[in-house]
Length: 327
Image 1 (cartoon, helix red, strand yellow):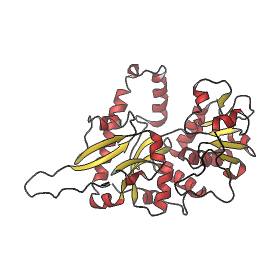
Image 2 (cartoon, one colour):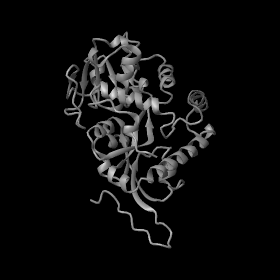
Image 3 (cartoon, rainbow, N blue to C red):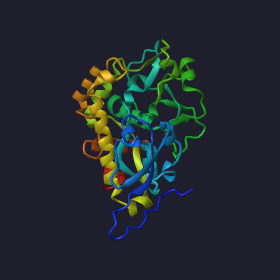
Image 4 (cartoon, rainbow, N blue to C red):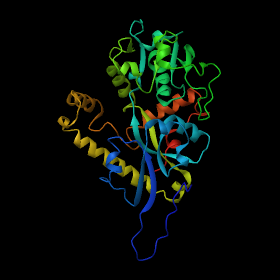
């Protein structure tokens, strides 16, 4: 399969041809103005591939597309290993990690510090949300990865990740939700809410009574909502066409601006309480929740890179500018 499109040579006197690129991401509201053609990319003739978010966490997707969404934790490992991939300062997915810790309703746990000496289950140890959670729990609540016993549903974590020697991880442990309900683990770190929780099962609750306030406090520390996915490009294409970074950044910003403008009319959203939620987010984060570029995101990226180094995702502590292509 042809992985990278070759640009046709320019002919003197004729307009510059747009560069064909295949671009992959999820069908988010913030990317739809690109995929539906409402927002054009300068100098680029895109063909878009849409997939579920998990697809960008399971393999080196930069080998399949010219430009693609990718798990941030997988990316920093690939960058550390010198693989031919660079991130763009475009963050298609952000998540509030502290909303993703679940415990049994009848448990006494109220804060991560209460989980010292306990057992934590997850779909996979290495997932990006879990990297964030372990780092935040260490910084803010004194719970280190070495303080608990971990249970992963996977038989092999993949992505070339190697567990630190001083961390106890049980692989192929079974379904996380079932482990929690049966008392085999005391808490879950989950990128998606357990199905029973979504169905309103009264036996499962979030760890924090006010998870939004806890998340807001951390967002103020780093100046943004933690990013979990980045857009990446194959190194060969970047070397041939470095100008695409600016074009893509401009396009993603324009797409986000359309979404932000639409959400100023919350009556059009099928979510009661959307008005209040948007007002709260704007007070905390300003007019847009999805900022692209390094400005405003440096502290979040630096914190993530430090967590990745401390947890064995990278062999050295990578700097922000080492991780992102120049605009």
